[in-house]
Length: 215
Image (tube, rainbow, N blue to C red; front, side, top):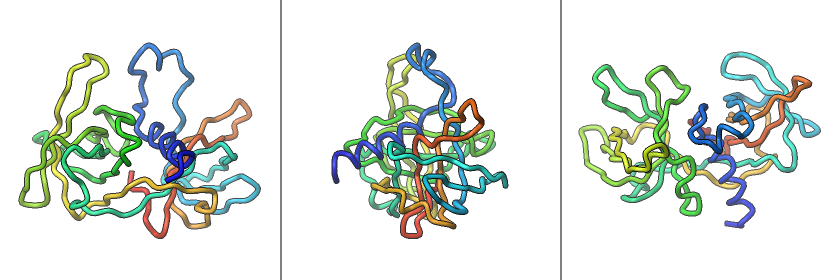
């Protein structure tokens, strides 16, 4: 994989994994994080993507030559090994038990991107955990992962247990380009809104070969 492609994916993953709140002094002094937009591409012309968001809204987003674009490739639960660095979106049930809704696998060069455990925007009980798989135990429906991450606030290592079913989407990030932004493609865009009200994409994770970004 080319170095430039790795940097592009790393940029998309870092934005994808970033919490919506400041975690440290450096973050607090930085610009506001981009808006996360899950959508379907309606058309892409002259560097501008017209998208229909999951909320049914239409938006026009500029995609420039510096926009980081990556695709996703399908993987299986058996592809995940102990000590792999992965990201898991999960929903907690009424008893606090966490059940994964999707898993994205980080290539080795992106180990540590967005590390942590924090709220996500897929529901009031949803969370995102980017961490190393420190334990794997077979369960009645898949496996239970122990995810270990370094807490940015305390500096200590913390663990989260998440049940992962083989039936949920499991993907790995792969290099992509503007050719993925075709009509009907599902995308997750990270865009900043300018003072003129127009959006500029910082990063895009796009459908590739029929595999949709599940996050």
